[in-house]
Length: 316
Image (cartoon, rainbow, N blue to C red):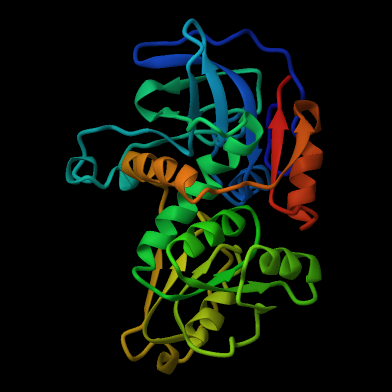
């Protein structure tokens, strides 16, 4: 499925099987989860895609020639020699490649990937259930790390990432407070099923102050809302690659050493740690499968909030 211009539907096309270059693997894709970042690319909110482009960065595939099962995430390559790479901050690389944005991704039967950025998939996860781990899981895990040792944790937006992260948070004996769009009873009910101690609308305050909050919804207005919900010394973590503008807010809700920080991409160490942790929790992903040719429908269902858990494209 190919994006030719932002704001236009993806087009199903026949392409030659790509030929791997040095350091690349040819992968036969089994499944690719659909991410909100894909929406930002398709809708033109991320403005520098390589066009024409095959989107998709939560890839489960087999290496042609060996059959090894691997996962491919958003961060698809780094330069290895900038000051960020050399200081174990490759997620901030000066010359990165992003799967499904600057590199063709997994909305396809075959793709290429940098062998350094392919992760072994834990046994026990079918392809369909493994795919959301590659971004919703990985980015959620990095956000949780940035939240520190917060015992009371707020999650703003209860989609693919939050439904994985709440399971990890419970494993770590944290309390989760879930904030959803006003009147979205389905999302609130889903959060309660997964053990949220409280659910409410995103403009409400929780019954007690939070130690940290993670904002997954790409809505800038939620930043001051989350600041009002966290206690003194609390942290608000912004988990998306794109967000609408953050409105001005009074200094008093930031004062008392509250912190707002963003999360950018991931490191390979994040991937190793999370994919080792997921089976121990154990994380269970809830998915809705779509055939590859229905990628536009999957994107629209995500855009419209009609999904419970994650959408996953299947290639068989």
